[in-house]
Image (cartoon, rainbow, N blue to C red; front, top):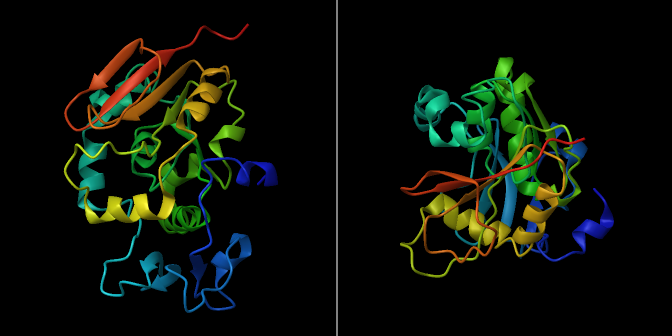
Length: 249
């Protein structure tokens, strides 16, 4: 990862993150995290063979983990290419589209898209979340996992001139009007923090040459000051705004 990116606003603060992995753990090969100390809050560890992120200050709190084969994920995939996410990314018309997810996070939207036929690049800049994704993909194997390339990099560095779509799901600052998020999202918000560079990332995607940019946002409760979209899908708990781009010449 380019050092200058980690010095820009929006990159996560890793001062309170570390790991307690065994010296021979395969995750250490690409892990850019120090061993955890007594004061470390967010700790990467293994439970039953899976990587998880736990809060050392709240040991009874359920850790953060990634499961691409949960009942919820199977339900989402079974909804097919007519669901708002897939339509926003153009999969209902182009099942084998090349899609870049510039803010992979826990990978659920991206896994759903790949399961429906998309070929994908995933960008995730936070070392802990990237480690969880890499471990989950290694355990997944199969055709869907084979269509995914995971990059430990900042979405602002993306090179996607040939992409059919770029998908963005930034952590917008919360205005405080919504109900408290589920525990999992509370952990993500505390771990990753708000993406202060969300508009910069959106502009980078708009300038990339991709055919469309898809921005996932809450229907209300977050102040999103971006341009008017060409299309929008969803509208219940989430909205997918679509910005269509002219074909590259």
